[in-house]
Picture 1 (cartoon, rainbow, N blue to C red):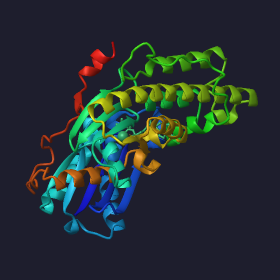
Picture 2 (cartoon, helix red, strand yellow):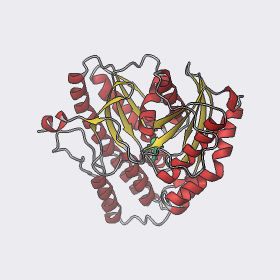
Picture 3 (cartoon, rainbow, N blue to C red):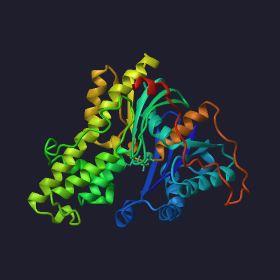
Length: 371
Ligand code: ATP
Ligand code: FE
């Protein structure tokens, strides 16, 4: 099997061709980070236009680099949710056009499932059941993956995701946002003293596996205000003293943001092992999982519990087409796909888009265990 994967759910336009033996034949990403830095966030209409400008080129490049044409494909996989519907639509329209013209089956992919399953492409030993912590710009999920397509949600965020907190922290600290905020905070944090600012760990009193990052965000903003940091000035022009205060905030923020993850993972492992005692792996994926500090800390938690950590390489943690193609392959193998669309399908069809699409059932017992 050779599958083309297309991803346009948020601000990256990505396409990739993957073989069912796990060979990545191509991987192309066009990022809107420059635009985002200029406007300070994702504006759906603008993001849609950016996807429209590059989608044909990104897909063509993915095919060219794989040395293939559409005729060589077995199927097309595309993210249908969750995400911004204007953006999802661009990828779905492109995927259906190719599938319709070349008579190919099509697989609609869940973006967060793809973040998790790409770990199975990296680690061939990774069998179901396993656990996954998915940490990105819009999601914070703790999942028990019992089987393909069978997920139990052990925890989710009640407000912001950790990636959002990294991005705001970067913005308020005046960091260079051209590559998204996370990597900039991680880099600056290496210079700082992580014990210097006393942030409190979110939701300590709640004995569940849910997350909250809105309060920590506010704590960071207040710390910046109380230290007279002039966040309007980019860090490149800040004084030495000012730079070191910013680094202290970055390091302290990162420490507490990750302590929150560690604590929730500890509890989730306990819960999950009760349900599925044979679990051996915790997958950590999504953009924030490319952070070295996050990986190192979670590796300790996992080892302490006699499990193994699987963390895809950074280029497969942030949004990419490989994870979509691979998830398509996994479902295709199980016979889960849609027949080729009609070649004459109008461009303004109502596609099956799922902007809000939960991944699996909520773990009901979680609420009673939390008491
Ligand atoms: P979602 O997957 O929830 O729909 P998304 O697709 O926008 O969100 P991803 O590309 O999966 O997000 O992840 C992007 C997020 O990851 C951003 O918030 C970014 O700041 C964060 N991120 C990327 N690299 C790092 C890093 N090294 N440290 C911390 N955060 C990071
Ligand atoms: Fe993502």
